[in-house]
Image (tube, rainbow, N blue to C red; front, side, top):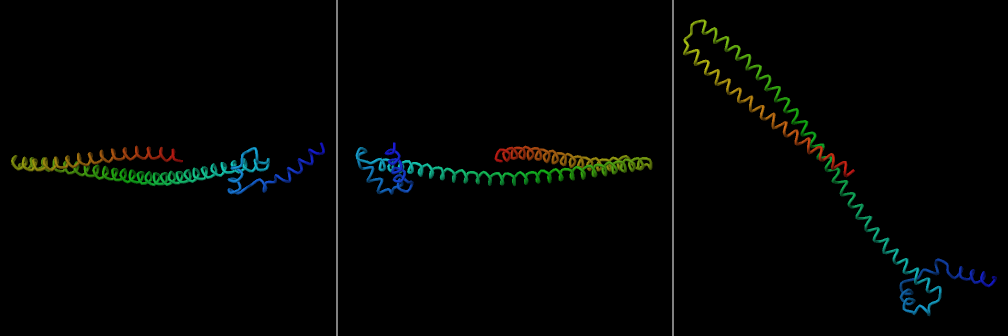
Length: 189
């Protein structure tokens, strides 16, 4: 056994990490030798060089893959930020349209009340004119004018209702888009 221990110690000294790593030139020279003519140390040096070369290639491939993943991640992050800004913009637009719709409804309701007051006044005036004995022709003429004015106001009220309906439809569409964008942002995050 003492011979084995001595040989083992010799191998340990001979096969240090620095002595097993070789240059590409040394590798080419050793690889050109037939395996039977290589020493154990040369055999190990060739095998270690090949393993290190594979490791280097794998490492480079992993670096490239990591760079691609980082780039893709940044692209997704930018898209997520852009979608978030678009979502916020859509929310603001929806709120603005909703507020505008409310203002228009308030204006239409006030105008309708004013028209009702005016109609009551006209009816009162019509009754007063009729009671004073104005001719039916004069009363009918004034009544036709008021009816025309009333139809114009009704048309205006319908137009405002249609505008309100379109605003509500737009609001619904914006809400659907917001929800879709929210889902996309959640998926991206």
